[in-house]
Image (cartoon, rainbow, N blue to C red; front, side):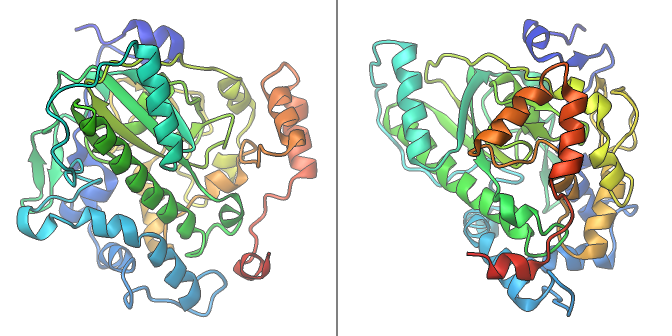
Length: 388
C-alpha cells in the first residue's frame, strides 16, 4: 500500500511503506491507565494533582500552593467541558472523544459565493473567538487514530467522526512566553492549561457557528487525530528536533485544535522557513532534556516503544522517559520549549530579524547569537509573580 501523498512533497514528510495509523490506546497518557509498565502510584497521583487539594504542593520554588492553585485554575474550563457528559456516557470530550456540546444548527447550508469568501469568513470568526492561528487542510486518514481510548473498558473503541468530511480547520492557541521561562514548575503548567481552555472555547464557538450555517462540524483537541501533521499541512510551520511544531509567530509555544467539516474551504499551503536545517545544527532541546528523551541523531524511523508512530522518518521523542520525568516532578515539563532558540516574542522586531537569520545560510551565526544574548535559564516563580 502506498502511503505517500502529493501533500508530502510540500511538507517534506517521509512516510514509509511500513506506515501504521496510530491507536490512541498506545498514547503514553492512556497507557498510564492500563499498561503495567507505565502504571504507578506516582502516575495516579500526578493526574489527581490537577484537582485541589490533591496537588501535593511543597516548599520549592514554583511548586507552592499558589503555583498549583493557578495551574489547576487554568485547567478548570477545560475540565468542565471535558466532563460534561462523562458520568452519563463515559465520554472524555476533547481528550478521548470529540466535543458534543452543540445545538442543532440550521437545516439548510448558507450559500457562500465562493470558497474564498467562506474561508475568509471562518478565519475572521476564529480570530474573534480567540484563535491565534488559523489554517485549513484536507482530510488525511493517515493522521486519524485507528481507534480512540475508552477509559471505562481500558481498551480501544471505533473513531466516531465521519470519514466523508473533506476539510480540516486547524487552530492554534499560543502559550504565555513569560510563564514558560519558569519551566520546570507547577506555575509554568498554567500556560498549558490556559492554552487548552482557550482552545476549547474557540473550537466550540467556531464549530457551532459552522453548524448554524447549515454544515457539519466536529470539534476536537487531543482526541480523534494527530494534531501536528495536520497543522503542518495547514501551513502552520515545521516540526523541530523536540517533535514539537515550530511556527514563525510563536515558535514552539502552541496548543492545537481541529474541526472536521464539510463546509467548502480553500486549503493553505505548507510553509518552510528553515526549521529543519536549523535543528540539524542545534541540539539545545536534546542537551537540556533531563531524562534524555530527545534524540541527538538525525531523523529516522526508530521506534522507542509502543507510544511512537510507526513508519515515519522523523525526530522522535522517547515518550516513556519524558512521562516518567513529568510524574517524578509532579507537573508537566516543557524545558524543551524554554531552551528552544525559536522560543521568542516575535512582536519585537529584533526577534523577527533573528528568525530571518535562522532561516538563512547564516543559521550558525543565529545559533551563536542565541547562546550569547538570550537567557534561557530557568526563572524563579517569584520573578513571574512580581513582574508587572
